Structures are given as structure tokens and as C-alpha cells.
Length: 187
Image (cartoon, rainbow, N blue to C red):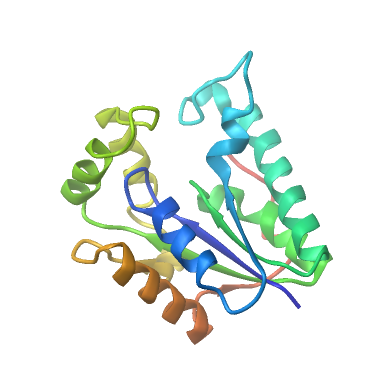
């Protein structure tokens, strides 16, 4: 059985850096799948994913990501998926996990907002740096209800410390999500 880690949080939370560390140091064959690349593949007709008009585009991209994860898992790989994977898209992942017989952990990196914005300012020019967009996306992860125990506060952790915390979280089994669907996608 393969393991899939959904590593998420707002822009600037450190997802890609930490996912690369976790995947590179994995004990088993592991793929690091960066969801941003799936969005960047849209060359004509792209809508920034955080805009309301992007909902249908985002559904298609998530389906493509889940299909890629499924193929890597079928090939015997563990997969670390990094991207903005809010609870609203978890039913798609849960359904695929149930059909593909994979274990799935959900970890949300959530430094405080000031730290998030500071880290976002230091990102490459091609990355999202719009304060309003980042603040809005940060808010989407501010209160996760029943998924709140899946949050790791990384305010005072560097990338190496965060990767260690993520590895420990996954190893604990406390961040596993049940497979199957929990309802339809919603806006």
C-alpha cells in the first residue's frame, strides 16, 4: 500500500520547500508532485486559481492532479503532493484513495499571518506575492473545523525543522484521512 501526503497551507507557508525535503529524504521510492505546475501548464485561458471565476478550471486541474497521483501510486511510489488543497477538494482525493487503496495523510502548514506574508515576500518573482490574495487564502485555512488537528504551526520553525515535524506527524498516524467520499465538491 502506498502512502500519499497532502501537504497544504496558504502561499508562503513553506509547502514546496518542505515537500521537497520530505520526498528527497524518504525511505521508500517517493514522488514530489507540485500542484502549481499543473496550473502553470494552462497557457491560454488561465484564471488565477484564487478568483471566483476559476472554480471550474480548479476542478479540472484537481482531477488531473489526482489522476497523476493515482498513476504514481499504481507504479508503487509514495507521493508527496504540495499545493493549496483546501477541505473543499478533499472528497476527490478521498474517492481516489478508496478506489486505489492508498493511505492518505493531510497536513496543513500554518505559520501566523505576519510570518506567512514575510515568507511570501521572499519568494521568487514568479510566485504569488499579492498581499490581499495571500491573506484571503490564509483565511481559508484559518479555521478547519474537524480538520484543525491536522495543522502544524510553523511560525518558529525553519524548513528543516518543519520537514521533521511533518515526518513525525505522518508517522504518528494522527494525520490520516479516511478514504471514500464525504460529499460533493462545493464552492
